[in-house]
Length: 301
Length: 204
Ligand code: SF4
Image (cartoon, rainbow over all chains, first blue to last red; front, top):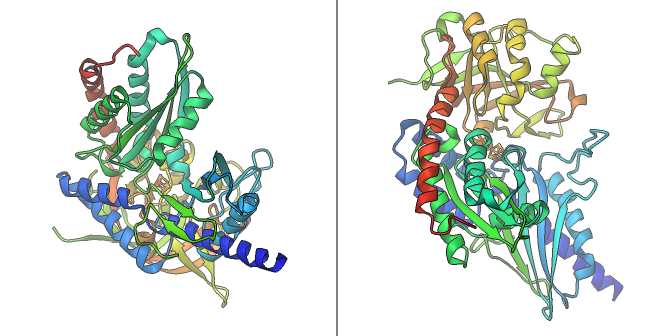
């Protein structure tokens, strides 16, 4: 029994190490499709040069099996685990081991730096890193794991602020535009902008990241929120920031808003941004560790 | 228009007529220098192990693979945000005589003034396109200051037609990103108004 368990944990680790490799080498289908669409629509000469470079980079990365951007970020995972998934007790350790292995084998750039000592561990693990967000799904025996690469440049525009309700939507919209026209330009646009709205800053911040996990092209199920998403997308695109901030037809891959009910006296807004190299992937594993990569159709690990 | 290729050592005459928005490529010596290298040279007063006069630097933290024969292979090397070096770049240009500063995003007024005074360019390489960049690196010639860590070390590379490099600050001190920022900000107020009036749920 112990032997089979060992074999299974090893297999699980191996799969996730390969999943991380896929995550840093290939963009998910929705991002690929959006980039192709924006590139088609681009009319600015410099914008076209940028999209051409992006296209070349993506195909070279796939061909040479190398990280498509040198900044392989801090690795973050969002785990939705079935309460009956047989390997649930192993998930944290397996993810940690998979990060260590992928760092060596792909290789990834070592990025995990301790706050006070400034020491870079050299292996992408550190205090609470890789970061894992958990959710338990009752009465299921499978697991969904999102992998997300939080790069430096694209994490820099991140911000959160608590508004007074009377400042309302106007305050929030201004806040988003100010952030994107200042910090957003250097974060390798076109960006996916995630906005979280809630009663407190921590909830808004978490929702802003959750918003980035949603596939591009989907809207928030709430009509008013979806309406805001569309208006923000059109508005930010009208700025014409273009790829690399050099000017062009679009500024964003999209704007995703996620909301929670707020306190009567507060309106918290948070912004998370993903760059054009939006590296996220979603895998589902069943109780027997059979897998399917949902973000990259047909991907074999 | 034919491809403009700058070869190191770069002379003033090679670059003075280039203007913001022009596209060039680099062949020759390119050295990675980001936050810690700037700090070590200018704040700690350490000497560089080699001269950068006429050469090019890249704001970048690469992924390098150590090969069995002791040499390095450039796996992935894209530019990092140049603005982080703004506080020290003017002094860096003055001190080293570097002619090409390559990175991502724009730089500020101090760097633009230095580019004008000392005849240097700031160029952007398309951000994130790190494998594309790596394929233009022919050889890793040396690595110094590896104690700073892989991303921060001083990697001396031999590159061939490294680019596209878009001139973002020219020798006249013109600044492409500053111009763009002014344009984006000028459009902003009107656009925000449209977003708000068009919105059906103005009062959250
Ligand atoms: S912002 Fe994104 S694409 Fe640009 S360098 Fe950082 S991780 Fe790479």
